[in-house]
Amino acid sequence: DIQMTQSPSSLSASVGDRVTITCRASQSISNYLNWYQQKPGKAPKVLISVASSLQSGVPSRFSGSGSGTDFTLTISSLQPEDFATFYCQQSYSTPYTFGQGTKLEIK
Amino acid sequence: EVQLVESGGGLVQPGGSLRLSCAASGFTFSNYWIHWVRQAPGKGLVWVSRISSDGSTTTYADSVKGRFTISRDNAKNTLYLQMNSLRAEDTAVYYCARVQRGGYFDYWGQGTLVTVSS
Image (cartoon, rainbow over all chains, first blue to last red):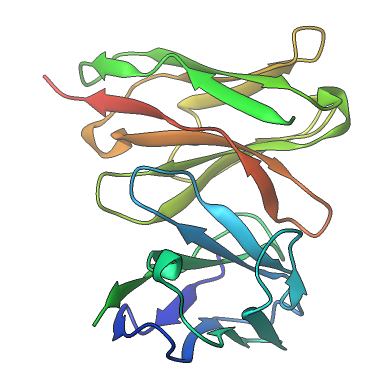
């Protein structure tokens, strides 16, 4: 199975900050990497697919990059509604594994 | 509007069985692969199973293989997850999710909670 490792596990930041979350795969997954945002009590919502494709309706302050084993999710200027838990997910091969999550909290 | 609505969760004793359903609407259900993903209380997301658009291909996580069975009825626009020999570690919110080409989940249900406890 492909292991996905996110860092950091938690992050404290302020409105307006630029934030970067990283995700590393245990083997190359090309660009089959997706990012989700999950708020408490809600289902996850896809933000970025295939490493860098911004989903329809997702604000442009979210961006993704990377290929192979190393990927990043960047939020250019944090807004109050962005505080949540973020997950990466590889779709290169089954089982489709997720990172352990990054909890983004308000400083 | 695309909707996925799970049902069938509840409290079950260890060793028991439960069948989850996922009712789909707002899209052509028979055109899509659908997956189950679960989330234990306070924990992360874990992929469970998937089924092809016509139901001919199924895949399972090792942790549920031999105990869970995924199926679908395209005439009823409904996905199922039959869960047998349930264990405490199966306690989680179970989500059904539609997958798009590229393997990302573009629509999710609201989830149904399964609690395995005596």
